[in-house]
Amino acid sequence: MNKKQISPWNEIPLEDYENHMSHDSVGQLAVLNLLTKKYLDILKPKICLFLGVAGGNGLEHIDNTISQSVIGIDINQDYLNKAKERYGEKIPSLELINFDITTEAKTFCKADFIWAGLVLEYTGIDKSLEFAINNLQTNGNLIVSVQSNNGVQSVSQSGIESVQKVGSIFQLLDPDILVVKANEIGLKLAGSEESFFPNGKSLKTFHFIL
Image (cartoon, rainbow, N blue to C red; front, side):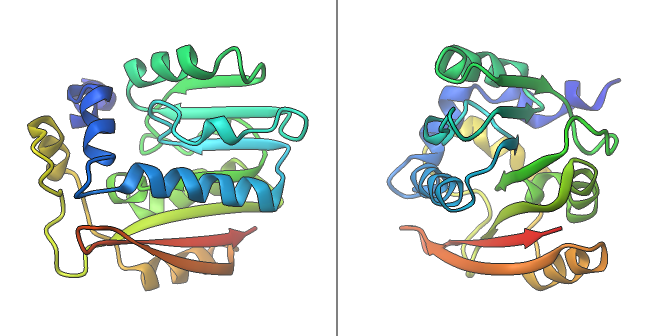
């Protein structure tokens, strides 16, 4: 059976996911949105690749006069359909691809900007970095945001039960190991920052350059 058919992500309605992520106790959707805007504004990329694009959170910050190609990849086709509905007309270059990046390091483009917000916890460091390298041009930017629980349980209690399913594939990452492994394959750390959530968790964001 195909991996993407049995992924817990295919059992969670987008509405549930977004309601969970934007819940007062979680607050991750808004922070990821602001981070997306920040790095798009700073880096002004021509070719953008969003890993785990879901319903397109942050795509409203794309400037079509700057970004000539925008690609979103997700394991859930329903999420992609909603992203297309929301942003298909606003972003003429938008291409949405149903793909599981853990299956192979397939090359879809040579981006100068790859965004991976809260993706590596579900796809793993090695597979994700290998995929990013294969889709990043020389001097391209990889922005990775990973969760730091700070002693709080992995999947926050928002009252939305369906999101608990992904707890079975969630793996909390060691940011230091992420930086070391990225460096080993040629990704140099250009900067990092930390954003804190209402529930005590935080988001550590790393900017790598190939």
